[in-house]
Image 1: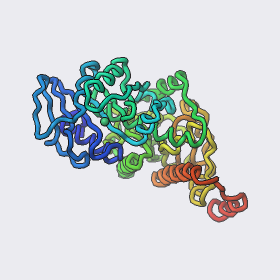
Image 2: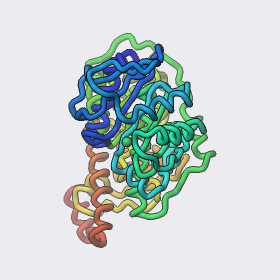
Image 3: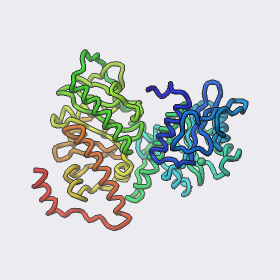
Image 4: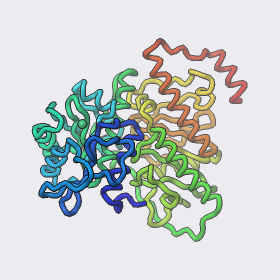
Length: 427
Ligand SMILES: [Zn+2]
């Protein structure tokens, strides 16, 4: 379903479900709005359970202040209206109090977004509004003034966060991406010093992704159709488990010697469907489709490694904490981790934007997973399931090691035991 063609009521319900489902708001906290072409503001109601909203609960406030609907509009309506007045380019606003962002708001610190390029590109710089009483005109004024300085995200002191955009989905994606940054930074600070990207490094990412020539497929084999479905399933699962964000993360699978399927760029991972998946054959893309910008990198890997059948790049907050601190990611924690992941090398930032041959060379039967500095984790496998398992095990391992820091020192499996594991499982 095309999100942009949905009625404002449905858009608001859909996004509230996503926010509530990801534990980024409570039953009482948070509010969303849409400004439509008539100047009407559609907004979530005050005092209604956020876990069970229906389209009929959504309130419409007319430009003259008339309220249409069965409830009172959100008590934060004044700041929504004040923001739309200062930012005529906005059509959607998201506000909530997710724990990781509240942690920053009460420590009175702004989460950095230049930790991975995608986050910085989606969020930009984050503004900061001083504390004011909830529901007051004063709160509306300080938030709107901060948005007027061209920030698309404003952190509210001792309160939460507000994001705005040209549509509600983009405002949500900014909100979700900033929440990802906050979660990642909280993990990372336990590990060590965070490496921020310089502007020139982010620029490298913006320029990345040469357009491929197109071809028109004459038929779609049954194997290809099955892989399309499996790619969609795994991308949804990765998204549901917070291993990917709505705008970040790629899955590809080999179809045959010279072709593979890959997820597209610019499609929300939750709404991904089989016809969005792009077939790449002999270096050309299926016409009218935009593959992930990493298509050439994946192609180089498939060309160099006939045994690789699937590749996933993703960012879970815990794994990304390693990629932005550069701390060694020790997988000799439990036998499962070492057997599935082996040792994971850290690839210096920027190498992924080359033609892909250098990255392909780093992979081997003994090195199935790479950590890309200030970017993603790249897992490979003979099948999509194996590549996905590696992603999940990497996330679990990273979370376990970071949690260990709070209770004691990590005691890795010894060299003798590792040899024993290798002899039994990996030879
Ligand atoms: Zn609030």
